[in-house]
Each structure stands twice: as structure tokens, then as C-alpha cells.
Image 1 (tube, rainbow, N blue to C red):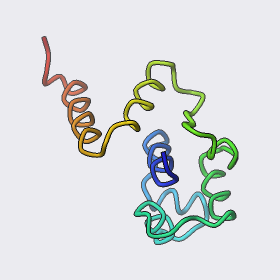
Image 2: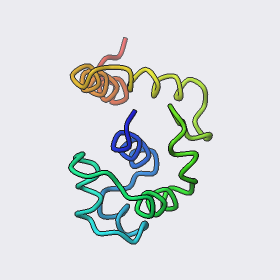
Image 3: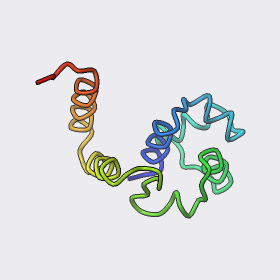
Length: 107
């Protein structure tokens, strides 16, 4: 999982859009978007600000396969599986999860 993927995962977890994350990290929205679109890599101070916005250290963020500790083991397992999938299958999984959570596939 690369930096952009980890930030996106944490944005979903904390329900933060790009503007909200930029505000919490005291960064420009264009900086966040550039990182998320993989057009630039964050400098150390930028990554520190982003991590602070999520309430974690850069060491926690950089640890391979970091899963926020608040997630139960089943959710953590789903997140790990998701990041092992290619993007097309990730999108299929998200669509399926949306359908299941909205009750479209009720038995």
C-alpha cells in the first residue's frame, strides 16, 4: 500500500474529504490532491502534518500494512484483502459492499 492509498483509507475511516484534511493538516488542498493523485510525494514535514491530522505518528503511518487499531479483526482483514486486489476488483468489491449495506441483495 503506497502513501496515497493509506491516506485515502484514513480519509474514509475518519470521514474527511480533501478540503477537510487540508484544513486539519494546515496544508493547501492542491498539496493533498497532488499527493493523492501521485503527482508528488509528500516531504517529511508534509507527511508529519497529515499524520497529525489523523492522530498518528509517521512511524505508525509508514509501518507496512498499517491498520488503525480501532478496527476489529474482521474489518482489518477486509482492508488487507482490499489492498491486495487490483483496482478493478477493488471497485467491484466496493459496489458489492454498497449493495449489501443498502439491502439490495437481501436473502
